Length: 134
Image (cartoon, rainbow, N blue to C red; front, side, top):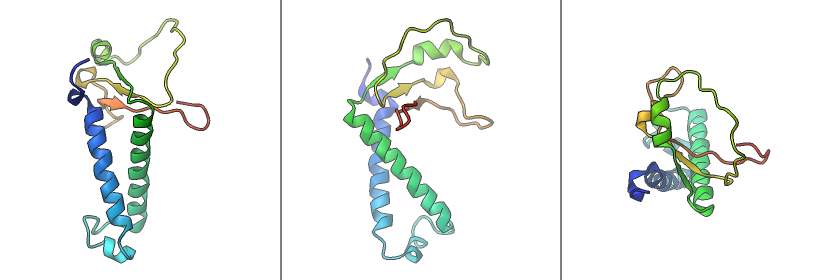
């Protein structure tokens, strides 16, 4: 495996740390009116609450990933040849034993983008939920 800094998990950790500080700063403000004076000026309370919820979700996912051993599945070399494919048919797959939370690196050459958006997806961090789904 190449350098740890090559993978987005390094950036994932940096973002989780930054969001932890941001949530702490915003939630420590005395009242919602003071939030408006921060970088959230002009954003409604519902949107701020939604962002705080997503920040906490990312922070919690990162904490779970760290506590589960920071497992990384590097799929870049497998995914790159499939770039642009619209229908990929898989034959029988072997039984997979996946950890409860893990990090999958696709790489830019996989050419995965959000539906109808020009934002490429380089990684994902699936996790098992309370309903035993990933």
